[in-house]
Image 1 (tube, rainbow, N blue to C red):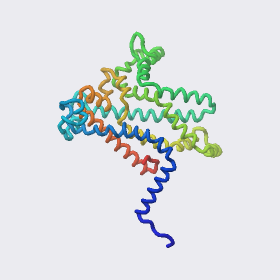
Image 2 (image 1 turned 45 degrees about the vertical axis):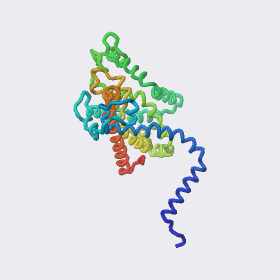
Image 3 (image 1 turned 90 degrees about the vertical axis):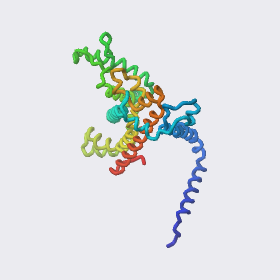
Image 4 (image 1 turned 135 degrees about the vertical axis):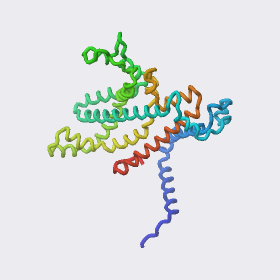
Length: 330
């Protein structure tokens, strides 16, 4: 043997020395990351201290606001708040889970399919000015406030008899229907309306990611496919789609992790008395019991449930992706 085997202690010291050497040589970048690190610690990890309220009887506590912040004047409740989540009430927590998952799956499928299709179509366009115009028009709604988006949707899907919205006016004028559907007051339409509105708002933003992935595909692959006699659709099927597979898998894993995070603003602004039962998500449930009814313990328990399930979903999707030989986050 010409060398001496390194002990674990020596290897650890060398790794530490290498880390501090790199950190010292790139101290400007480290300094620039401090504000973002503080932001994450303050707004993502700092609020975790409030999770203790899920194990206390905050609803029946008496005292000042300062006592509440310190966790005083509230008896320990154990896991009672988590048990209360699944008890019958005015708003069933199980119904909110069903609504949240259903709307998330609709948003996931419609959003992913529409973004990929639009990216493929734009990738096939050779006129750069038209391509840039379409990209600009499609991703601008991403920057609109949700209040504006819902306001536009309410005008489009208005079903009043005297002054129907553009959609019902079109359906009536073409004779497709004799009476315009009541889009906003029919529970069966609500989930799909949320999905369609979400696609309109976010499809352009999602398309940017897939177009970026397509620009990384080697042009020689398209040339080789053309020489072999592949048409445009065959090149899309056998070159473009496999080229963006890794991007699709990573985004899918991230979206699965957010499966219970379907949103708050759109459902809150779009729901009406007739659709309230199908509009309530976990976030709306937390607002209802945490703010309106001052039951912070129950609301915190719902938030913890959502976070834990999200961790399991993200870890599970990442594990399955690894087993299938695909890219993964961890």
